[in-house]
Image 1 (cartoon, rainbow, N blue to C red):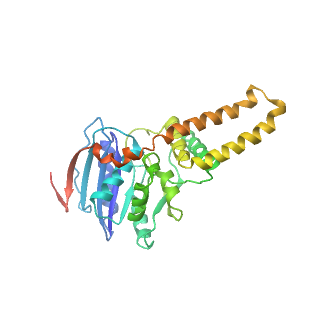
Image 2: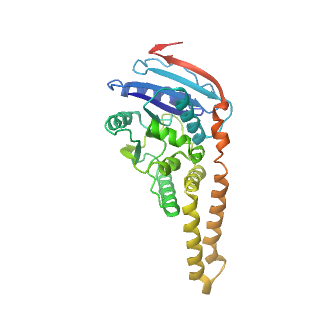
Image 3: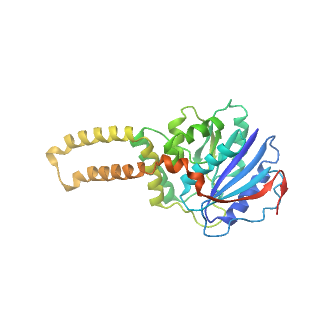
Length: 296
């Protein structure tokens, strides 16, 4: 079985080096071919490094992009590159900062060997962030569930079959939201329990604003459901407050309309033409390791 680990990266050189070292340790007893493809999202610092002791990894490629287009689009471009250029059975997208733990790769692959081609998600059962972020994350899950009816307990850390990758490339929402798109196209996903790790170096880049944008991006994938639920809420809420209308009681409606406007703006990011031409953004490709021989 051929597994490609897809790592989007932006200015996390030290973390990437640590991640590759840990992946090499975790996959040593697996009876499959493990390759790594890194998508460098136009980092402002040098990403290429000398990766030593990677004897358990078949190959490593570094794809350098011309323009920074964000995390979701970085992953989408990586999936397109792998599907069009590589032979593989499964792709495992994972963050490059240590929060997606390399020790869980084994669980993905062991389940994949028994799954008959089904895709697998890492269902988050525990997080390592502080209390404030965890509260924000619970709010993010509540928003997604309330507006879409979908319970999405996973992020990018998944194990995607070739069939699923092809479906994602044919779904324009993939260009805007990885987890939302995957939840939309696959109804029969398997899962493993996943514990969110701690970053190898530096603070998290996920602020409250970024988490809110992430939530709205997921919600925008299910916009028809959102519009129906929002319309029903507006009708019932107006009936509820009509005898006691005021600026304060109208505030939930204002917030809802603002959210709908934000979601509508995010829908415009689902640009099929940009997605189809995403590999035009590739600047250079560095072959870091090939066929178990370092090229440095």
